[in-house]
Image (cartoon, rainbow, N blue to C red; front, side, top):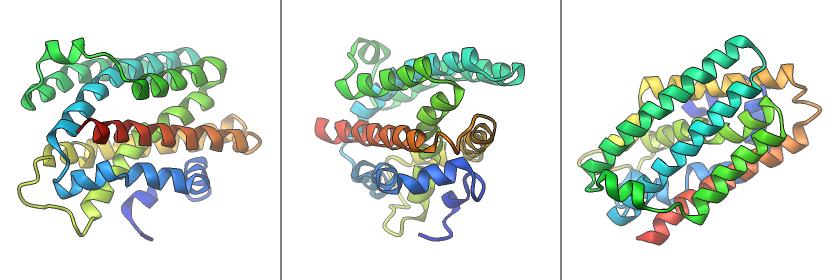
Length: 231
């Protein structure tokens, strides 16, 4: 897929592209998981998507906590302000997510009453653990596969020759992450990793950072897989 739009995330030689290349197997298994392929084809069972939506809401709550931790770990006042704004944006997104769930027949009461799965717990707590025990670079590496990965997932779907272009029931989800505002967010996250790699000794720490990046991608794979298993 040489020359694909998602290959432009980050800068040549920057930390993000180096991490993605070093963890290529895990990254591709995440961004082109069978769950994603079935979203593209419009064949994903409704039960799988509903399960995913509920767990994604529960994930967002902990994602906000991780972003709040990034305020504490922020390397500058500007970074702290940026992360504080991100926390508020995610908290607002939880409201939008509940409304979106309702469009799929999931009431707010149903969503909130559903317990977190083992996959959701393992992913979210792992991210928080990396942030608590590391610095801002460790935390951002753990977070980036979610933020940047969803942008790449959407672009992969748009480039998929087997994509269902008419009447795809999941088009609204695809459009959300293919939209210009989300793509800008994904690119900013990749650029931030590049900058932190330079300011926080990314080269010297690269071996450990690759391990974390690959682990986050594996946890994302399991997050998709739980949806398929619920169908």
